[in-house]
Image 1 (cartoon, one colour):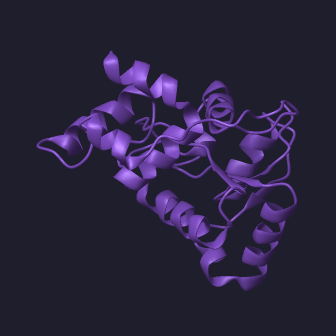
Image 2 (cartoon, one colour):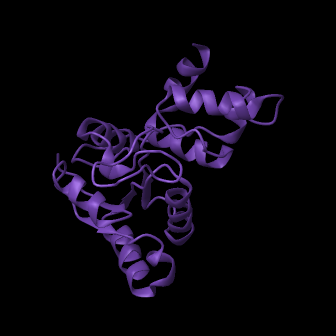
Length: 191
């Protein structure tokens, strides 16, 4: 599977895993090093300007911290977000599960990685059609924010879509726009 955008992952094991699944430029953040290493950040920003980037971090708090940092450092429209769903387990190379007990990019199967990248809207040579974006107002109208028990509804909704359940309202909007169009959102809400 050829991906035109550069894919940004957390570590070397994630890069090795992706390298066996996709043909793409894969860059590691080396964990939080991206936050402190100006040269690495400039390189990722340059990639974003030239070919775009796809952020594929783990679904734990560290992964979301890195994802959110990059979101604030990259121009809008030059960054896509691919999400690994919350899957309990541990990577084979580790003696015990991560702090949050979730599999990271390196631990999920190839099909899950491919689906995440496809859902994010990676460019594989096909033309991307303009689409109506899902907004926070749409989430509000659907009862996913701003109402009684909306946080629980949002977690359940995200889980049903195979998205991480820790998504804030803003992150959920970004994730939904990466994995579906407005019409699909309406169909999903009506189920």
